[in-house]
Amino acid sequence: MKYIQFFVVLVCLVLCSCQETIDLYPQSNLNTGTYYRTVDEVRVGLTGCYNGMQAPLQTEWQLTELRSDNSKQGVPASTSSNNRDLSDLDMFLPATIHSAIYSYWLTTYNNIRNANIILQRLGVVYDPSAGAISLQNIDIKISDTDRKQLAGEALFIRSYHYFNLVRLYGGVFLLHTPVSAAEARAINRSSVADVYKLIEADLKTATTYLNPAKFAQITGSSIGRANQWAAKALLGKVYLTLNRKAEAAILLQDVVTNSGFSLLPAYANVFSVTNEMNAEILFTVRYKAGGLGLGSGFGNSFAALNSGSAIINGSGQGLNYPTTELNTLFTTRDNRRPVNIATFGTGTAARLYVPKYLSPVVLSNDGESDWPIIRFADVQLMLAEAQGFRPESIGLINQVRARAGLPALAATVNSVATFEQALAEERRLELAFENHRYFDLMRYNTTLTTIKAVDVLRNHFAAEYASHYAQYPVPILTLPELQANVTEQKLLLPIPQREIDTNPSLNITQNAGY
Image (cartoon, rainbow, N blue to C red; front, side, top):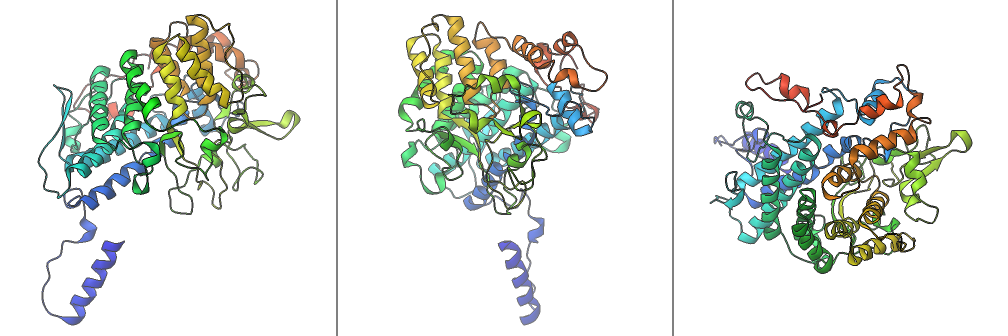
Protein backbone atom coordinates (compact mmCIF):
# COMPACT_ATOMS: atom_id res chain seq x y z
CA MET A 1 0.00 0.00 0.00
CA LYS A 2 2.83 2.38 0.75
CA TYR A 3 4.31 1.78 -2.70
CA ILE A 4 0.94 2.41 -4.34
CA GLN A 5 0.33 5.59 -2.34
CA PHE A 6 3.80 6.89 -3.20
CA PHE A 7 3.24 6.20 -6.89
CA VAL A 8 -0.14 7.98 -6.97
CA VAL A 9 1.24 11.09 -5.24
CA LEU A 10 4.25 11.15 -7.55
CA VAL A 11 2.07 10.94 -10.67
CA CYS A 12 -0.09 13.83 -9.43
CA LEU A 13 2.98 16.00 -8.84
CA VAL A 14 4.33 15.24 -12.29
CA LEU A 15 1.03 16.03 -14.03
CA CYS A 16 0.37 19.21 -12.08
CA SER A 17 3.71 20.90 -11.62
CA CYS A 18 6.16 20.15 -14.42
CA GLN A 19 6.71 19.05 -17.99
CA GLU A 20 9.74 16.89 -17.23
CA THR A 21 9.51 13.20 -18.20
CA ILE A 22 10.25 10.84 -15.34
CA ASP A 23 10.90 7.19 -16.19
CA LEU A 24 9.36 5.08 -13.40
CA TYR A 25 8.98 1.30 -13.38
CA PRO A 26 5.27 0.66 -12.60
CA GLN A 27 4.85 -0.68 -9.08
CA SER A 28 2.02 -2.89 -10.34
CA ASN A 29 4.69 -4.79 -12.29
CA LEU A 30 6.64 -5.80 -9.21
CA ASN A 31 7.79 -9.42 -9.42
CA THR A 32 10.53 -11.66 -8.12
CA GLY A 33 12.91 -10.10 -10.63
CA THR A 34 12.30 -6.55 -9.44
CA TYR A 35 11.62 -7.14 -5.75
CA TYR A 36 13.86 -8.62 -3.02
CA ARG A 37 16.56 -6.04 -3.71
CA THR A 38 17.01 -5.04 -0.07
CA VAL A 39 17.12 -6.84 3.24
CA ASP A 40 13.80 -5.27 4.24
CA GLU A 41 12.16 -6.65 1.11
CA VAL A 42 13.58 -10.09 1.86
CA ARG A 43 12.12 -9.86 5.36
CA VAL A 44 8.71 -9.03 3.87
CA GLY A 45 8.97 -12.06 1.60
CA LEU A 46 9.95 -14.28 4.50
CA THR A 47 6.92 -13.07 6.46
CA GLY A 48 4.90 -14.25 3.48
CA CYS A 49 6.49 -17.69 3.88
CA TYR A 50 5.32 -17.82 7.50
CA ASN A 51 1.83 -16.78 6.45
CA GLY A 52 2.00 -19.40 3.69
CA MET A 53 2.16 -22.14 6.32
CA GLN A 54 -1.51 -21.51 7.15
CA ALA A 55 -2.97 -22.76 3.87
CA PRO A 56 -1.76 -26.40 4.03
CA LEU A 57 -3.05 -26.66 7.62
CA GLN A 58 -6.58 -26.09 6.33
CA THR A 59 -6.62 -29.65 5.00
CA GLU A 60 -3.76 -31.32 6.90
CA TRP A 61 -6.06 -32.61 9.65
CA GLN A 62 -8.04 -34.48 6.97
CA LEU A 63 -4.91 -36.29 5.81
CA THR A 64 -3.66 -37.06 9.32
CA GLU A 65 -6.11 -37.03 12.24
CA LEU A 66 -9.05 -38.18 10.09
CA ARG A 67 -7.04 -41.11 8.76
CA SER A 68 -5.97 -42.12 12.26
CA ASP A 69 -7.90 -43.57 15.18
CA ASN A 70 -8.38 -40.10 16.72
CA SER A 71 -11.01 -38.71 14.39
CA LYS A 72 -13.82 -39.68 12.03
CA GLN A 73 -16.38 -38.12 9.70
CA GLY A 74 -19.10 -37.08 12.11
CA VAL A 75 -22.26 -37.68 10.08
CA PRO A 76 -22.11 -41.25 8.74
CA ALA A 77 -25.58 -41.16 7.18
CA SER A 78 -24.79 -38.06 5.13
CA THR A 79 -24.77 -38.26 1.34
CA SER A 80 -23.42 -34.72 0.78
CA SER A 81 -20.35 -34.56 -1.45
CA ASN A 82 -18.29 -32.79 1.23
CA ASN A 83 -19.02 -35.45 3.83
CA ARG A 84 -18.47 -38.24 1.34
CA ASP A 85 -15.04 -36.77 0.56
CA LEU A 86 -14.23 -36.85 4.27
CA SER A 87 -15.57 -40.39 4.56
CA ASP A 88 -13.39 -41.55 1.68
CA LEU A 89 -10.28 -40.35 3.51
CA ASP A 90 -11.54 -41.75 6.81
CA MET A 91 -12.19 -45.19 5.25
CA PHE A 92 -8.99 -45.31 3.14
CA LEU A 93 -10.94 -44.98 -0.10
CA PRO A 94 -9.70 -41.67 -1.55
CA ALA A 95 -9.69 -41.20 -5.30
CA THR A 96 -6.55 -39.91 -6.95
CA ILE A 97 -8.55 -36.76 -7.83
CA HIS A 98 -9.60 -36.11 -4.21
CA SER A 99 -9.81 -32.35 -3.68
CA ALA A 100 -8.19 -32.25 -0.22
CA ILE A 101 -5.25 -34.35 -1.39
CA TYR A 102 -4.63 -31.95 -4.26
CA SER A 103 -5.29 -28.83 -2.18
CA TYR A 104 -2.70 -29.83 0.42
CA TRP A 105 -0.19 -30.69 -2.29
CA LEU A 106 -0.73 -27.41 -4.15
CA THR A 107 -0.63 -25.09 -1.14
CA THR A 108 2.47 -26.82 0.21
CA TYR A 109 4.34 -26.49 -3.07
CA ASN A 110 3.22 -22.86 -3.34
CA ASN A 111 4.99 -22.11 -0.08
CA ILE A 112 8.03 -24.18 -1.02
CA ARG A 113 8.28 -21.90 -4.04
CA ASN A 114 8.04 -18.87 -1.73
CA ALA A 115 10.87 -20.23 0.42
CA ASN A 116 12.98 -21.08 -2.64
CA ILE A 117 12.71 -17.50 -3.92
CA ILE A 118 13.96 -16.14 -0.59
CA LEU A 119 16.79 -18.66 -0.51
CA GLN A 120 17.79 -17.80 -4.07
CA ARG A 121 17.96 -14.09 -3.29
CA LEU A 122 20.09 -14.87 -0.24
CA GLY A 123 22.48 -16.92 -2.37
CA VAL A 124 21.65 -20.25 -0.74
CA VAL A 125 22.51 -23.19 -3.00
CA TYR A 126 21.82 -26.89 -2.48
CA ASP A 127 24.18 -29.43 -4.03
CA PRO A 128 22.19 -32.68 -4.51
CA SER A 129 25.28 -34.80 -5.12
CA ALA A 130 26.93 -33.73 -1.88
CA GLY A 131 23.73 -33.17 0.08
CA ALA A 132 25.11 -29.86 1.29
CA ILE A 133 24.11 -26.20 1.49
CA SER A 134 26.47 -23.37 0.53
CA LEU A 135 26.33 -19.59 0.18
CA GLN A 136 27.13 -17.67 -3.00
CA ASN A 137 27.85 -13.98 -3.47
CA ILE A 138 24.78 -11.73 -3.60
CA ASP A 139 24.11 -8.08 -4.40
CA ILE A 140 22.00 -7.36 -1.30
CA LYS A 141 23.66 -5.29 1.40
CA ILE A 142 23.20 -7.47 4.48
CA SER A 143 25.27 -8.55 7.45
CA ASP A 144 26.44 -12.16 7.64
CA THR A 145 24.42 -12.66 10.82
CA ASP A 146 21.19 -11.37 9.28
CA ARG A 147 21.76 -13.28 6.08
CA LYS A 148 22.21 -16.57 7.89
CA GLN A 149 19.26 -15.95 10.20
CA LEU A 150 16.90 -15.23 7.32
CA ALA A 151 18.26 -18.15 5.30
CA GLY A 152 17.94 -20.45 8.31
CA GLU A 153 14.29 -19.52 8.74
CA ALA A 154 13.52 -20.18 5.07
CA LEU A 155 15.40 -23.50 5.23
CA PHE A 156 13.39 -24.50 8.29
CA ILE A 157 10.10 -23.74 6.50
CA ARG A 158 11.15 -25.60 3.35
CA SER A 159 12.29 -28.66 5.30
CA TYR A 160 9.08 -28.70 7.34
CA HIS A 161 7.00 -28.80 4.15
CA TYR A 162 9.08 -31.50 2.50
CA PHE A 163 9.03 -33.59 5.68
CA ASN A 164 5.24 -33.58 5.60
CA LEU A 165 5.12 -34.28 1.87
CA VAL A 166 7.47 -37.26 1.97
CA ARG A 167 5.62 -38.81 4.90
CA LEU A 168 2.24 -38.40 3.20
CA TYR A 169 3.07 -39.09 -0.47
CA GLY A 170 6.44 -40.83 -0.50
CA GLY A 171 8.89 -39.66 -3.17
CA VAL A 172 7.82 -36.25 -4.45
CA PHE A 173 9.07 -33.61 -6.89
CA LEU A 174 12.21 -32.11 -5.42
CA LEU A 175 12.45 -28.38 -6.12
CA HIS A 176 15.22 -26.56 -4.29
CA THR A 177 15.36 -23.48 -6.50
CA PRO A 178 12.70 -21.49 -8.39
CA VAL A 179 11.91 -23.04 -11.78
CA SER A 180 9.79 -22.05 -14.76
CA ALA A 181 6.73 -24.00 -15.85
CA ALA A 182 8.70 -25.56 -18.70
CA GLU A 183 11.50 -26.59 -16.35
CA ALA A 184 9.01 -28.04 -13.87
CA ARG A 185 7.56 -30.32 -16.54
CA ALA A 186 10.98 -31.91 -16.96
CA ILE A 187 11.32 -32.80 -13.25
CA ASN A 188 10.06 -36.22 -12.19
CA ARG A 189 9.53 -37.67 -8.74
CA SER A 190 12.61 -38.07 -6.57
CA SER A 191 13.27 -41.02 -4.31
CA VAL A 192 12.30 -40.91 -0.65
CA ALA A 193 16.01 -41.07 0.19
CA ASP A 194 16.78 -37.99 -1.92
CA VAL A 195 13.93 -36.03 -0.34
CA TYR A 196 15.25 -36.82 3.12
CA LYS A 197 18.74 -35.87 1.94
CA LEU A 198 17.50 -32.34 1.21
CA ILE A 199 15.54 -32.17 4.48
CA GLU A 200 18.60 -33.18 6.48
CA ALA A 201 20.83 -30.69 4.66
CA ASP A 202 18.32 -27.88 5.22
CA LEU A 203 17.92 -28.57 8.91
CA LYS A 204 21.59 -29.22 9.67
CA THR A 205 22.37 -25.88 8.07
CA ALA A 206 19.49 -24.19 9.88
CA THR A 207 20.79 -25.40 13.25
CA THR A 208 24.03 -23.52 12.61
CA TYR A 209 22.48 -20.41 11.03
CA LEU A 210 19.56 -19.75 13.37
CA ASN A 211 19.43 -17.73 16.57
CA PRO A 212 20.64 -19.90 19.50
CA ALA A 213 18.94 -17.75 22.15
CA LYS A 214 17.24 -19.66 24.94
CA PHE A 215 13.54 -19.18 25.56
CA ALA A 216 13.88 -16.36 28.11
CA GLN A 217 16.18 -14.44 25.75
CA ILE A 218 13.82 -14.51 22.74
CA THR A 219 12.27 -11.07 22.54
CA GLY A 220 10.87 -8.50 20.14
CA SER A 221 10.73 -9.39 16.46
CA SER A 222 12.35 -12.79 17.12
CA ILE A 223 9.22 -14.07 18.86
CA GLY A 224 7.39 -16.58 16.67
CA ARG A 225 10.26 -17.08 14.26
CA ALA A 226 12.12 -20.34 13.74
CA ASN A 227 15.13 -20.62 16.04
CA GLN A 228 17.99 -23.04 16.53
CA TRP A 229 16.05 -25.14 19.05
CA ALA A 230 13.07 -25.60 16.75
CA ALA A 231 15.42 -26.72 13.98
CA LYS A 232 17.16 -29.20 16.28
CA ALA A 233 13.84 -30.59 17.47
CA LEU A 234 12.56 -31.00 13.91
CA LEU A 235 15.82 -32.60 12.80
CA GLY A 236 15.54 -34.91 15.81
CA LYS A 237 12.08 -35.98 14.60
CA VAL A 238 13.48 -36.54 11.10
CA TYR A 239 16.24 -38.76 12.49
CA LEU A 240 13.73 -40.62 14.63
CA THR A 241 11.53 -41.21 11.58
CA LEU A 242 14.57 -42.62 9.76
CA ASN A 243 15.26 -44.85 12.79
CA ARG A 244 18.55 -43.07 13.45
CA LYS A 245 17.76 -43.05 17.14
CA ALA A 246 21.22 -42.29 18.49
CA GLU A 247 21.50 -39.12 16.40
CA ALA A 248 17.95 -38.15 17.32
CA ALA A 249 18.62 -38.62 21.03
CA ILE A 250 21.64 -36.30 20.97
CA LEU A 251 19.66 -33.45 19.41
CA LEU A 252 16.54 -33.96 21.50
CA GLN A 253 18.54 -34.19 24.73
CA ASP A 254 20.24 -30.92 23.84
CA VAL A 255 16.83 -29.25 23.43
CA VAL A 256 15.52 -30.69 26.70
CA THR A 257 18.62 -29.72 28.66
CA ASN A 258 19.78 -26.45 27.14
CA SER A 259 16.98 -24.66 25.27
CA GLY A 260 15.28 -23.01 28.24
CA PHE A 261 11.92 -24.31 26.99
CA SER A 262 9.92 -26.42 29.43
CA LEU A 263 6.56 -27.94 30.29
CA LEU A 264 4.01 -25.45 31.56
CA PRO A 265 2.41 -26.34 34.91
CA ALA A 266 -1.10 -26.37 33.38
CA TYR A 267 -1.89 -28.16 30.11
CA ALA A 268 -4.77 -25.83 29.20
CA ASN A 269 -2.50 -22.80 29.48
CA VAL A 270 -0.35 -24.07 26.61
CA PHE A 271 -3.18 -23.30 24.16
CA SER A 272 -4.58 -20.13 25.73
CA VAL A 273 -4.79 -17.13 23.39
CA THR A 274 -3.71 -14.97 26.33
CA ASN A 275 -0.52 -17.01 26.75
CA GLU A 276 0.79 -17.39 23.20
CA MET A 277 4.45 -18.20 22.49
CA ASN A 278 4.91 -19.61 25.97
CA ALA A 279 7.78 -21.75 27.24
CA GLU A 280 6.33 -24.93 25.75
CA ILE A 281 5.97 -23.67 22.17
CA LEU A 282 9.15 -24.18 20.17
CA PHE A 283 7.37 -23.44 16.92
CA THR A 284 3.79 -22.72 15.93
CA VAL A 285 1.85 -21.53 12.90
CA ARG A 286 0.51 -18.20 14.03
CA TYR A 287 -2.95 -16.71 13.48
CA LYS A 288 -4.25 -13.22 14.12
CA ALA A 289 -7.91 -12.30 14.59
CA GLY A 290 -9.36 -8.91 13.77
CA GLY A 291 -10.54 -9.06 10.16
CA LEU A 292 -7.00 -9.06 8.75
CA GLY A 293 -7.38 -12.23 6.71
CA LEU A 294 -4.98 -13.99 9.09
CA GLY A 295 -7.48 -15.50 11.54
CA SER A 296 -7.96 -19.19 12.28
CA GLY A 297 -11.07 -20.98 11.11
CA PHE A 298 -10.54 -24.12 13.18
CA GLY A 299 -12.77 -22.94 16.03
CA ASN A 300 -15.75 -22.85 13.69
CA SER A 301 -14.67 -25.92 11.73
CA PHE A 302 -14.34 -28.15 14.79
CA ALA A 303 -17.18 -26.82 16.98
CA ALA A 304 -20.26 -29.04 17.13
CA LEU A 305 -22.50 -29.05 14.07
CA ASN A 306 -25.57 -26.82 14.33
CA SER A 307 -24.54 -25.53 17.75
CA GLY A 308 -25.56 -21.96 16.94
CA SER A 309 -23.74 -19.46 19.10
CA ALA A 310 -23.60 -21.79 22.10
CA ILE A 311 -19.95 -22.69 21.41
CA ILE A 312 -18.69 -20.04 18.99
CA ASN A 313 -20.12 -17.15 17.03
CA GLY A 314 -21.15 -18.41 13.60
CA SER A 315 -21.84 -21.99 14.74
CA GLY A 316 -19.73 -25.05 13.99
CA GLN A 317 -19.25 -27.59 11.23
CA GLY A 318 -18.62 -30.63 13.42
CA LEU A 319 -15.43 -31.58 11.58
CA ASN A 320 -12.56 -33.62 13.02
CA TYR A 321 -15.12 -35.51 15.13
CA PRO A 322 -13.42 -37.38 18.03
CA THR A 323 -13.67 -41.15 17.98
CA THR A 324 -15.42 -42.99 20.78
CA GLU A 325 -12.27 -44.95 21.54
CA LEU A 326 -10.18 -41.78 22.05
CA ASN A 327 -12.90 -40.29 24.22
CA THR A 328 -12.88 -43.44 26.34
CA LEU A 329 -9.09 -43.48 26.55
CA PHE A 330 -9.11 -40.11 28.30
CA THR A 331 -9.90 -40.92 31.93
CA THR A 332 -11.89 -38.53 34.08
CA ARG A 333 -8.70 -37.80 36.03
CA ASP A 334 -6.86 -36.64 32.91
CA ASN A 335 -6.97 -32.84 32.83
CA ARG A 336 -6.15 -32.91 29.11
CA ARG A 337 -9.58 -34.27 28.23
CA PRO A 338 -11.62 -31.02 28.47
CA VAL A 339 -9.03 -29.25 26.32
CA ASN A 340 -9.27 -31.89 23.59
CA ILE A 341 -12.83 -33.23 23.77
CA ALA A 342 -16.07 -31.57 24.83
CA THR A 343 -19.74 -32.51 24.53
CA PHE A 344 -22.57 -30.45 23.08
CA GLY A 345 -26.15 -31.43 23.87
CA THR A 346 -27.47 -34.16 26.13
CA GLY A 347 -28.76 -37.70 25.90
CA THR A 348 -28.96 -39.25 22.43
CA ALA A 349 -28.46 -35.81 20.88
CA ALA A 350 -25.06 -35.33 22.56
CA ARG A 351 -22.20 -34.73 20.14
CA LEU A 352 -18.47 -34.65 20.75
CA TYR A 353 -16.27 -31.89 19.36
CA VAL A 354 -12.70 -30.54 19.58
CA PRO A 355 -12.43 -27.33 21.67
CA LYS A 356 -8.63 -27.08 21.47
CA TYR A 357 -8.62 -24.24 18.94
CA LEU A 358 -11.58 -22.28 20.24
CA SER A 359 -11.26 -18.58 20.90
CA PRO A 360 -13.97 -15.90 20.94
CA VAL A 361 -14.58 -14.53 17.45
CA VAL A 362 -16.42 -11.50 16.17
CA LEU A 363 -16.33 -12.84 12.62
CA SER A 364 -16.66 -16.52 11.74
CA ASN A 365 -13.40 -18.26 10.90
CA ASP A 366 -11.37 -15.40 12.37
CA GLY A 367 -9.94 -16.92 15.54
CA GLU A 368 -6.75 -16.10 17.41
CA SER A 369 -5.63 -19.64 18.32
CA ASP A 370 -2.23 -20.67 16.95
CA TRP A 371 -1.54 -24.20 15.72
CA PRO A 372 1.45 -25.74 17.56
CA ILE A 373 3.95 -27.58 15.38
CA ILE A 374 6.64 -28.45 17.95
CA ARG A 375 5.95 -28.49 21.68
CA PHE A 376 8.31 -29.28 24.52
CA ALA A 377 6.14 -32.25 25.55
CA ASP A 378 6.54 -33.62 22.02
CA VAL A 379 10.32 -33.30 22.34
CA GLN A 380 10.36 -35.08 25.70
CA LEU A 381 8.31 -37.98 24.41
CA MET A 382 10.42 -38.23 21.25
CA LEU A 383 13.52 -38.39 23.45
CA ALA A 384 11.92 -41.24 25.40
CA GLU A 385 11.21 -43.02 22.11
CA ALA A 386 14.76 -42.49 20.87
CA GLN A 387 16.29 -43.76 24.12
CA GLY A 388 14.03 -46.79 24.28
CA PHE A 389 13.02 -48.82 27.33
CA ARG A 390 15.10 -47.48 30.22
CA PRO A 391 14.41 -45.65 33.50
CA GLU A 392 15.25 -42.23 32.04
CA SER A 393 12.66 -42.69 29.31
CA ILE A 394 9.97 -43.72 31.77
CA GLY A 395 10.86 -40.64 33.81
CA LEU A 396 10.25 -38.39 30.80
CA ILE A 397 6.84 -39.95 30.22
CA ASN A 398 5.98 -39.57 33.89
CA GLN A 399 6.74 -35.84 33.78
CA VAL A 400 4.11 -35.47 31.06
CA ARG A 401 1.67 -37.64 32.97
CA ALA A 402 2.18 -35.67 36.18
CA ARG A 403 1.25 -32.46 34.40
CA ALA A 404 -1.91 -34.22 33.18
CA GLY A 405 -2.82 -35.12 36.77
CA LEU A 406 -2.11 -38.83 36.26
CA PRO A 407 -0.04 -41.17 38.44
CA ALA A 408 3.36 -42.43 37.38
CA LEU A 409 3.44 -45.47 35.15
CA ALA A 410 2.79 -48.65 37.07
CA ALA A 411 5.38 -51.31 37.73
CA THR A 412 3.72 -53.37 35.01
CA VAL A 413 5.56 -51.23 32.45
CA ASN A 414 8.50 -53.58 32.74
CA SER A 415 9.31 -54.69 29.19
CA VAL A 416 9.92 -53.31 25.73
CA ALA A 417 6.36 -54.17 24.72
CA THR A 418 4.67 -52.52 27.71
CA PHE A 419 6.96 -49.49 27.43
CA GLU A 420 6.14 -49.00 23.75
CA GLN A 421 2.41 -49.25 24.41
CA ALA A 422 2.65 -46.73 27.25
CA LEU A 423 4.70 -44.32 25.14
CA ALA A 424 2.37 -44.52 22.15
CA GLU A 425 -0.70 -43.99 24.34
CA GLU A 426 0.85 -41.00 26.07
CA ARG A 427 1.74 -39.34 22.77
CA ARG A 428 -1.77 -39.99 21.49
CA LEU A 429 -3.37 -38.28 24.49
CA GLU A 430 -0.87 -35.47 24.94
CA LEU A 431 -0.78 -34.44 21.26
CA ALA A 432 -4.38 -35.20 20.30
CA PHE A 433 -5.71 -33.17 17.36
CA GLU A 434 -2.33 -31.59 16.63
CA ASN A 435 -1.83 -33.76 13.51
CA HIS A 436 0.77 -36.04 15.08
CA ARG A 437 -1.04 -39.36 15.51
CA TYR A 438 -0.98 -40.59 11.90
CA PHE A 439 2.66 -39.63 11.43
CA ASP A 440 3.44 -41.37 14.72
CA LEU A 441 1.74 -44.58 13.62
CA MET A 442 3.71 -44.62 10.38
CA ARG A 443 6.96 -44.01 12.27
CA TYR A 444 6.21 -46.78 14.78
CA ASN A 445 6.37 -49.26 11.90
CA THR A 446 10.12 -48.68 11.97
CA THR A 447 11.04 -47.38 15.42
CA LEU A 448 8.93 -49.67 17.62
CA THR A 449 8.75 -53.46 17.60
CA THR A 450 5.20 -54.05 18.88
CA ILE A 451 3.03 -51.38 17.18
CA LYS A 452 2.15 -51.54 13.49
CA ALA A 453 0.02 -48.90 11.80
CA VAL A 454 -2.09 -51.33 9.75
CA ASP A 455 -3.02 -53.34 12.86
CA VAL A 456 -3.90 -50.22 14.86
CA LEU A 457 -6.13 -48.83 12.10
CA ARG A 458 -7.88 -52.13 11.46
CA ASN A 459 -8.57 -52.42 15.19
CA HIS A 460 -9.92 -48.88 15.10
CA PHE A 461 -12.43 -49.86 12.42
CA ALA A 462 -13.49 -52.85 14.49
CA ALA A 463 -14.01 -50.70 17.59
CA GLU A 464 -16.08 -48.10 15.74
CA TYR A 465 -17.83 -50.32 13.21
CA ALA A 466 -21.19 -51.07 14.84
CA SER A 467 -21.77 -47.52 16.11
CA HIS A 468 -20.42 -45.66 13.11
CA TYR A 469 -19.17 -47.31 9.93
CA ALA A 470 -22.11 -49.73 9.68
CA GLN A 471 -24.40 -46.68 9.52
CA TYR A 472 -23.10 -45.47 6.15
CA PRO A 473 -25.50 -45.38 3.19
CA VAL A 474 -25.67 -48.28 0.77
CA PRO A 475 -23.41 -49.89 -0.19
CA ILE A 476 -22.37 -50.71 3.35
CA LEU A 477 -18.94 -52.26 3.64
CA THR A 478 -18.63 -55.25 5.91
CA LEU A 479 -16.01 -54.96 8.63
CA PRO A 480 -13.57 -57.27 6.79
CA GLU A 481 -14.05 -55.23 3.61
CA LEU A 482 -13.43 -52.00 5.50
CA GLN A 483 -10.34 -53.39 7.20
CA ALA A 484 -9.02 -54.63 3.85
CA ASN A 485 -8.81 -51.01 2.69
CA VAL A 486 -5.89 -50.46 5.06
CA THR A 487 -2.71 -51.80 3.55
CA GLU A 488 0.96 -50.90 3.85
CA GLN A 489 0.75 -49.36 0.38
CA LYS A 490 -2.27 -47.22 1.19
CA LEU A 491 -0.67 -45.71 4.24
CA LEU A 492 0.64 -43.28 1.61
CA LEU A 493 -1.73 -40.98 -0.21
CA PRO A 494 -1.91 -41.01 -4.01
CA ILE A 495 0.01 -38.49 -6.03
CA PRO A 496 -2.66 -36.01 -7.21
CA GLN A 497 -3.86 -37.27 -10.59
CA ARG A 498 -3.65 -33.76 -12.00
CA GLU A 499 0.15 -33.91 -11.74
CA ILE A 500 0.18 -37.03 -13.89
CA ASP A 501 -2.49 -36.06 -16.41
CA THR A 502 -1.29 -32.53 -17.18
CA ASN A 503 2.32 -33.45 -17.93
CA PRO A 504 2.69 -35.39 -21.18
CA SER A 505 6.46 -34.87 -21.09
CA LEU A 506 7.14 -37.48 -18.40
CA ASN A 507 5.88 -40.85 -17.28
CA ILE A 508 5.04 -39.98 -13.66
CA THR A 509 4.31 -43.11 -11.64
CA GLN A 510 1.36 -43.30 -9.26
CA ASN A 511 1.81 -44.75 -5.78
CA ALA A 512 1.11 -48.46 -5.55
CA GLY A 513 -2.46 -49.37 -4.65
CA TYR A 514 -4.11 -46.48 -6.52
